[in-house]
Length: 202
Image: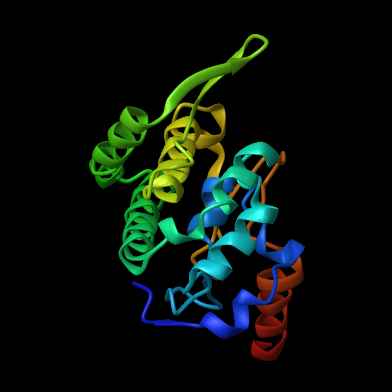
């Protein structure tokens, strides 16, 4: 559970190190500053931070993102709270799937109402031979819907079997490597910290 936010710090900007999940859904769940196995600090504590995160996340197409930015008055505190709650529900679902736990499927099922609602408000459209659900940019639930639709897409993809959680923090990633596979969300952060800790323990 996220116990505090860091509104000022993360509204300024995002770096490559914030997008290591390999999928926008995982990068969304990873919007918590974390150096251990406790989800401590909310990196999307206000709408400015959400919008700036979305610009680099690949969550929306350029056209969708522009449409989402046109009317910020739709984004109120209640919608932000819903977005946070869904993020933590999605975290629990991915945790169960990454651990291969029996509880994983039950946690995923709890996401169904939000996914169904997003489909009900969305539009099914296509480009060429590719089709997908698109959120309604005029709905107050647009950000939640955008995430929920991408969650549905992720759960049906082959990436779900490659889902892993970092050995050091709570961040998730898609492991597309071979052999032993990745242990850390990012070698530059958790990987180096784990190496330093192991060195100090020798």
